[in-house]
Length: 231
Image 1 (cartoon, helix red, strand yellow):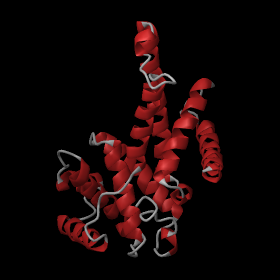
Image 2 (cartoon, helix red, strand yellow):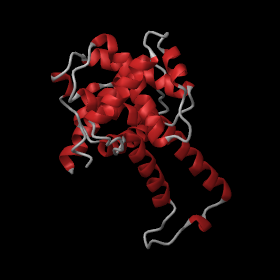
Image 3 (cartoon, one colour):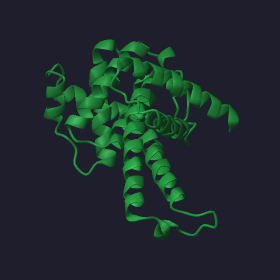
């Protein structure tokens, strides 16, 4: 199922460029934070948008409308509450009408055959992060070794896990916007993002410097490639 929903060649069949896709997703990421939506919702919205683009040509002037419509559908799928349509349209400076958004919403559902759920990078990132922590708490014989740790060691372990997860999430956000990573499965990208986050933390690097961001994407690409060939 994970392989079947990857739209790695979607830009071959639509009027959208990799640069415009990057700009839209780079806009959607702070929007989902502003609306206090989960990263799962953001990842699913990108997935919905990519699958729709793979089957339906979209004019460049309607690309932003596609982004907020995909975000609305993702909200209805994974969130408890969805933002109001008027709120989403206001984020687009009211360039589109409610009718346009609702019509596009119906079209997306028809094109995707109402299959909105998909394995996303957010799901696998959460899974691998929790699995990694559980592995550290288990001994080689499968017996928990948490009781043998000092309280300070346990707290430090939790802090390291949280820092690694936050940094890996930022790396995953970069890969969402970069069309070059569409050829990799979400599970592989999430696993490599965690590995890269651990490397950055060991070298005391962050993602604030634009130079580090560029090196991060290059390193991430190499990690994904090496992991893919080793599978």
